[in-house]
Length: 136
Image (cartoon, rainbow, N blue to C red; front, side, top):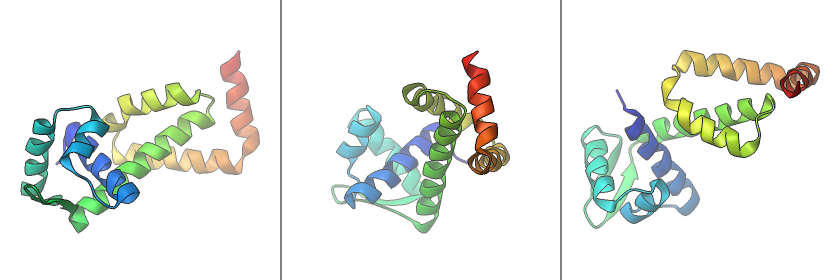
């Protein structure tokens, strides 16, 4: 079972590896605005829990389990942001709101939101009706 903090780290590590090909403690600290010592502690925990393999001074790699979790967490974030944008929330607020809610929704709820996003994408009139109603 992961905590919201663990999820933030796994998600950020996944994104850094996707973008740069690697993730260093200093990169993770900068991305999450935390101290490198905090990153080292969390990375050691994630190593123990088999989400990644960490070798001091050599960097880290995600295990297959860690990659799968990282990808799912990034997709969850993107889905929630897409959902909020589709219902008329402005981009900056949507990002802030996703950061606040993403860890508090069950995966079943995320799946339901995904179904709604698909519906709104395929039914632009429904999306327009929601946005117009929000503007009132």
